[in-house]
Image (cartoon, helix red, strand yellow):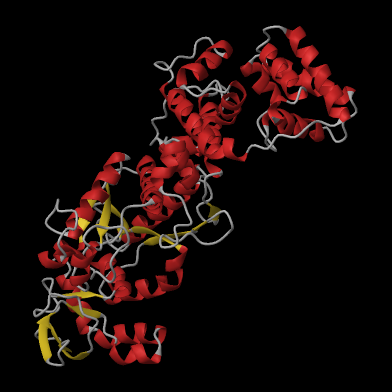
Length: 528
């Protein structure tokens, strides 16, 4: 499989080959490669979100691709910036007054408003780890506070201090005039207030490893840059961290793109080699606007998982990560059905091993793809719920078993989950938007003909046979173009503008039941 992976074209393999080339460069320089380190970052002032999932999942896919083509050990760090100062009180958290009284302090020094952990930062870190564990990610958790205080960053911090002017030369051109007057890459943690201060540094002493800065009361205070007495501004921090930890690979969103050259420069100043990097696009809402947590114009991971499987979310993240994609509720059914289609293709006897490595489900499942089939699609289930007025799993499963007798909840756990998703999605998104219309004279004649022909088919369950019959009726009644006929079926019978193959729906619902539904529509029952 390693040879096949080396030739595979899926984007995680392309990224993994960059890492192989990096390893070869290091070895040619005479150094030993003990492992490859991947990193993802997390800001713990807010809860883990759908972007957190995407970043860790995508990084994990590159890691797995690399492991497939190499036996070099790998590690993934989930790094929490929990030493950052609390800059504002997050919305919808308990004890906002207490949080406001602790603004400016490191998140690991702010009391936990939930009362379950020793600090706000510790609470949010626990939420992050639970989040990552829930999805089965392999990672090592790093706390910024612990890493700074342990001395792990000390050598790199002293290098930054020794090259203070070089760092300033990198950063100052990116700042406005007023900010340039007070900027320093070092943020002291005040021994007086405990706050992480955006303070003016008046001098630095390389020999002693200290900076002297202006305290909030105007006095001058001298502190070491090591041992957690200071932290770096976030842009220098990223580059310093790469150097100190020896990060080989990091992903980030497009909003980091303009800062990437700064990270690289600081990494080199701190004595490191910048990692291989991958920029992914940000998500848009249904109107094409960038998703913002503060505006709440996106969907949360909890909302996605209420209507679709984790695998469908993973597929959405896997596909075209460098293309800006709209992330809203309407994309969920499409993602679910695309996952089912990829799963079917993976298990097809005609699929080669090389093709399986290109299939997203191989990456999503870490090479261990579940052997499950879905006899019906999510789109078909939604229309089945609509047509049968199913409001319970039992009713819906009764229709499914009539179409696929071997399908059972116990034997098809993925389909059992899909049934629940379909019932919930239909009630919340499809049912409120249904708009039925009366048929035209041409449509009425064609529908009457279709109902009679469906009755004649009896208990036919072959979707191709039924679909061909629907085509024949549309052609016989001179629909031009033929898609106008299918548009009429969806609008008159289902109250929507589009849907799955109508023949597949009728075969699943039953030809006789579909004929009865057509006659109810012709009688105007759906318009009442």
